[in-house]
Length: 448
Ligand SMILES: Nc1nc2c(ncn2[C@@H]2O[C@H](COP(=O)(O)OP(=O)(O)OP(=O)(O)O)[C@@H](O)[C@H]2O)c(=O)[nH]1
Ligand SMILES: [Mg+2]
Image (cartoon, rainbow, N blue to C red; front, side, top):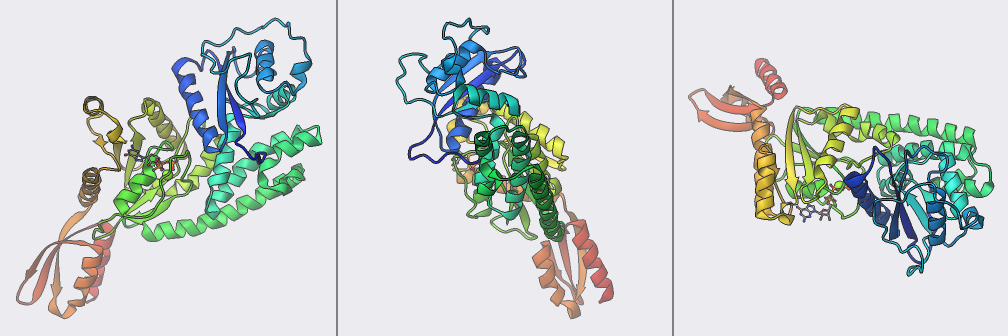
């Protein structure tokens, strides 16, 4: 999918369909989130419309009254404009306030319409014909953001697979060349000419490539597997990358846009510890995540999979962080990430009053309140991580004869030395280390 290039930002009209299963605060929050997604894509949200329906499964996802209203807001370009204006509205209007005046428009017409739900290919085609403007559903928007933000080979492959899976059925149901051009938009021009077989071949090829890349990543992970590792996970925009930067002293970018990070980055905890502790930043989650993208997280989240400690970062200043946390738990369960130890990090505390902070700590007594902008909080989290890593280690005494003094340097670089005693014939070190490294050291000592 590629969005029509325009000199000015395309004006987007957002549509929420509220159903008995999806209404009230949940629908309002979801619509606000869609506005942020659409803004991340570079659209200008000019208004929202909503409608009550018994479900989103109807062939015509909008009632005729609402459709005509939206047709007016989009400049009457489609078939809906030809219909009798004195229709009977068969669906009651929404309980949500519309931000757009339905007549006497004081804004430029909307160029695109975005639904805050998933539309089947035929629903999408119907609405597009009726309105005569480009129509997106929530999945289409999320996939487009992922396509734009993917940087590494793995991320690009995963997103392209998800995108082709999304586009494929829409190409299949295509009847006109025009539509094909619109729906083929994202893979670059070549996708426009893709027929079903080509899409299938391309998907198979991408999957093969992905397996190869993943094998290399797996090897790298195995090499690091003895080190204590921490994974930052959470909803998009919670502050994971900012936290990563703060606790590793790295230049990982945090950005105020959704899905800024699509790849897992791994860095050492800073100030450096002995042995090193690894920290990984991961892709953020969002509600109603397309299933293909969840599947693609399997490999992106492999670091979290192997992590010794999971830091669940939430934007505690966002009123909906509890439901966002539920989404994180659900996706992690779906991709099979468990992690032995967990800490809830209530981030962006600088945006909260003292009273709000106290209330949250009473609600989540085991959590840690942080602001990535407060160095004291970063130091507190650093200490927590180091203490947790230490508690995971075994303490042992090792006797090293002076003749094998060289090994002491090696021990210092892989283990934490608690005590050193210089005896007559040997050095006695008390070390803390993980079981694997200790075992390896003991074997080496036997060979001396
Ligand atoms: N006020 C405040 N803003 C923060 C804090 N931490 C991060 N931010 C801001 O929140 C926005 C998102 O931060 P990121 O670190 O990119 O968030 P993320 O969780 O990595 O997001 P994704 O990569 O999209 O999943 C940025 O504008 C940050 O500057 C904080 O403690 N307080
Ligand atoms: Mg990030």
